[in-house]
Length: 132
Image (tube, rainbow, N blue to C red; front, side, top):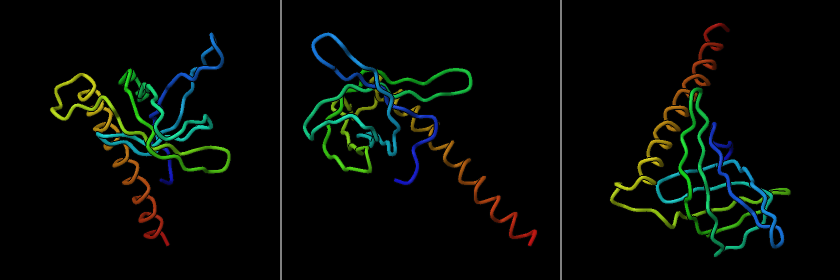
């Protein structure tokens, strides 16, 4: 869990008092078909439910999976922030739901971006070795 996933954020709302809500954006560090790991300074307890919008920023459009219910299963402190492991409560194993389709699309694009990034970083290291 060294780096945040590229161009992918989770948005959620936190209630402050009776009428005020704050929309928060948090970086994601892991994502699979069953859940994610996000980092934020907002405080949740294991067992809390959070409703997430996963947003992947693309050059021409955004890929968005909205209204994903998640259950906080683990909390780890890191400096002034927390890493939260979140299991998706609305996961449907048949893969036919809109949620499953959008999540699959986000994961496909994410894996391609990570593959390109790893090729670029490994290519620059080998290129500098050849020059030396």
